[in-house]
Amino acid sequence: MTLFGFRIPMMASLIVWALVWEIVGHMDVIFLIPPMSAILSAGIDLVQTASWQNATVVTIRSFVIGMALAIGIGVPLGVLMGRSRIADNIFGLWVNMFVSAPLSALVPVLMILFGMGETTIVVTVFLFAVWIIVLDARAGVMQVPPSLIEMARSYGAPPSTILRKIVLLAALPEILAGIRIGLIRGVKGVVIGQILVAIIGYGELFELYSRSFDMERFWALTIVLFAAAMLLSGIVERAEKRIEYYAGAR
View 1 (cartoon, rainbow, N blue to C red):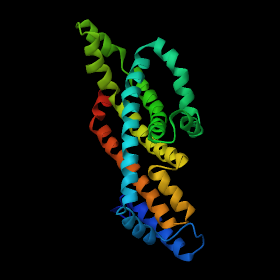
View 2 (view 1 turned 120 degrees about the horizontal axis):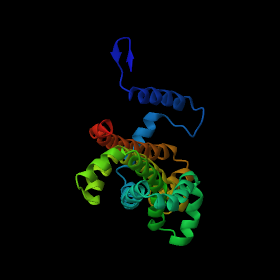
View 3 (view 1 turned 90 degrees about the vertical axis):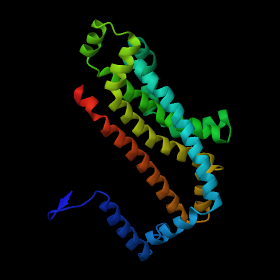
View 4 (view 1 turned 30 degrees about the vertical axis):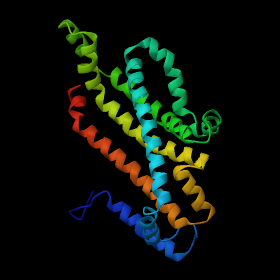
């Protein structure tokens, strides 16, 4: 954005909102909104505590395992649905149903099935992320021009080569877009799962801070999660831009 001939970065809006938050916090209008300076100070102290470090290890481990399963299953399933009408008819209804379903309501059921532990969090992350990855991978494969596949077949390319060198590369922008959205949904899943379980990871800390009305640390932990989601999204978005020429060539 350009203002009066000066280029203003998009992150400047965050500074504006932080200033507004600081002013509202000092006005003592709502005790749930402390000043931003107090939140940042509490955040610096928070990341040095053993409880936050242990919770971060548990959260990252659950998130990484859940996302690895979501990507490892979602991408091949989406490619299969895009290449096979039979597979698309079999799995399409279930994928669309889970995409639109309120997955938070399933967490208590998962707690009954998998217990009050880390396994429930991993499954929650998987369910939040996998379906959008499947849909985007399917959409990318279905947009591959048939002429490219026919040309490869006319030159005698085997199906495995067509899949690796034409279908996957042409569908790569949509696959990465699905992974990027899946990462954001996975962060949501790990937080919701831990809050509902409320005995491990960040969920335990959120429960502790909300019960004791320690809003500075509550909001500091929330900001950490938002920053992590934005960082993950930005990393995948940069990868998307590096391979945009596949979409242009397509």
